[in-house]
Length: 140
Image (tube, rainbow, N blue to C red):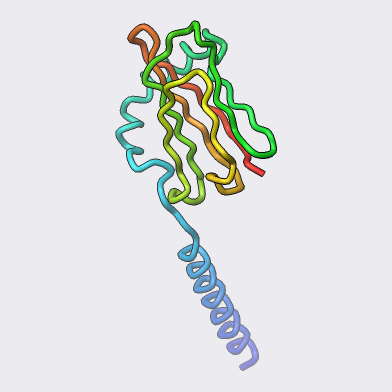
């Protein structure tokens, strides 16, 4: 009789554990990091080539920050075009920002960004070839 009760209590405890685990997992945000995830996967080799070209240029676009603002700079003699900066928050896509840069010095106030971790993807063209720089940024 005691053996049977022990098995029943163990099964109930296991079922409670599984239900709790399912509730916790379903309460987490599980958005894709990019809406075009599958399209980007298909063009992954071109992205790798663009990153290698940017490394050969020693990653010319720099992001510097101070207490109040973030500054995106690059040497004006490089003649870069179609510069886009994507500031992506991994845990909340509503906070993502996409910037188009038309000047060699671009300043953004930190009040426009929420504090936290950002994945930064910088895409640009130089002489018709695509370049891509990937980095991380922490806004405090």
